[in-house]
Image 1 (cartoon, rainbow, N blue to C red):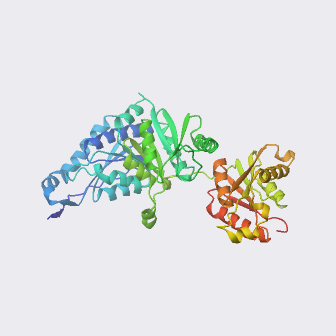
Image 2 (image 1 turned 120 degrees about the horizontal axis):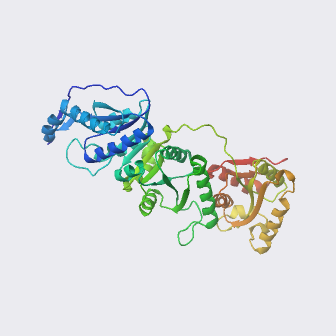
Image 3 (image 1 turned 135 degrees about the horizontal axis):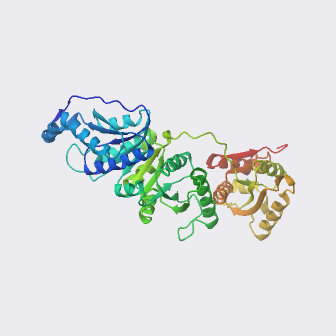
Length: 466
């Protein structure tokens, strides 16, 4: 049976700085001391003070009572001051903060105080005893719950060598083309002011999102478009810093693939944005950042979306996918699609020739004209010629590159969605359903399915008289 005792030493309050600062929690373990060296170098290069925080839990196992009574209270505070004096020899301003309470709660609360710019924590294998609280899950949980970027120093020697200007830092940044990615890239740009970076970006694709070859590689066109999109997102923030892009097909979670890539590249730092889901949403959705954190053995920077405050920017569309039904209303759809690219770009027209399986869809097959279910060369050739007739000739679209493609698929909506992903479309443009029996049976359900499942904005163009 375990017995517990409340250890409540006299608490001395130390004020936090009135300006920005770097936060470094410590438990005086070897890993924490090395992390403090990293934090001190970052603070010095940033021209900021270092806030050194130690928290002792109020509850301790009675079997560790002797250690608690020895280390708690004034002795603990003196050790904190000793560590602060050691770090001050590097020329950085150090402020100490001693707290009593749950380490996770106290550190997380400290990250939410106005002025904290980054928290740096150490990481080491768990050991027995009550003081080594950073070695367990506390560091990872601070990364998940804190409101500022959290740097977990697992290879401090690599970070110190970089901060001292002795070697560039190889960084792998996870990108999924979302706002969370932008938060990670913005933090990466701030790191670039501390030393030379070799930046690599990883975009992990879940199975089934893009067409994949038998060898497990994504199709060439989709891969090229994704690499371009990732590079553009990174370059837009990082400027002239060289960027290498990696596209990988992972499992349903993707964290294992990301950690494996970091190991293959011998990455010195992994940067990941996190949305920090809470409550029921956290139970239902796996966390990519925590998955990478639990699998990776290198340094990791977790950047919460809540810490990112981007300037308002109007997105620029570059690629528009236009799904056409080869009806008289298509001209209107084409006109509006081209209007989405006033500065130029690429428009790809597609038409899907449906292949209906009567045994599976007898009601739908009965409504379709007989020649609609054929998918021979004559049908696709006729569709290709019809698409070419829809390409407008106008000086107003001279900056727009126009492409066309005819597809054959049993599911029209799925064909459009797959084509948009392969093309790397910024938006999808479709015509509104007609009121004919065929339109009601096919086009209406297709438009609805595309709108409900697409990852991109969908522009629905009403046809005159439709």
